[in-house]
Length: 295
Ligand SMILES: [Zn+2]
Image (cartoon, rainbow, N blue to C red; front, side):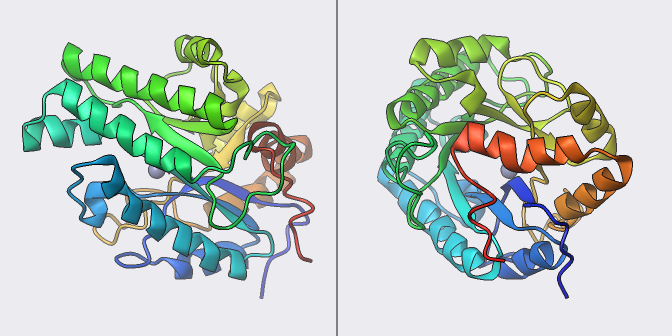
């Protein structure tokens, strides 16, 4: 039995690991709970066992995500889309564990982003072009560490982040960010404008209900959703489900976004549901979560 919530339900950021985690079973849980659309972000390269040396070495990481997205789309009433990029925590793996200097780490991570951008259909999130194909990415993912670093690593990370924004402008696609916890990222929004990318199309993943600058992808806790719903600014909802058998309780499960949508209905947050699952996805990614529903 599927719970029909009478609306598209999009989880804006989760991971699926068909080889080590629950993979497609997690998608089935999401769909049975009333979820319809997913943005699937590739797992960090090192968690999939890849010791990257060149940008090309990221390709199998991205291919894993493209494969699982195709399978997820077969199950969902709506569909899934891939979001590809380089996890900002890689800089520490390279510098602390593998002896890279920060500049070399920066270059490798930027090269990985260049390869990710090759998978993005030109104009993917522009809303004007053709619908994104299943072997094409919808958006890019970049960012900077959420923990304290040396100045040199911070500088290298910001250069990677800005490169990601430039690629987003070039491909006319949205860019998801992993950053430190913050309710004010107007500096990064300014960098997006410098690069020629609308800050609305820059999405801070793991966000609170309130954010100055980019669009918040709000972690689906009731307290955060209360804040986002009251503000009525564009926002998205996510779980950051990591699909990691070693960290089963680390994050929210795949049923959380549909469950929270049901709770939002009970609270009378109907406008916020439409905001997060129809209007903001259209503005940010150029996707139509209504016409892509089969039912
Ligand atoms: Zn994540």
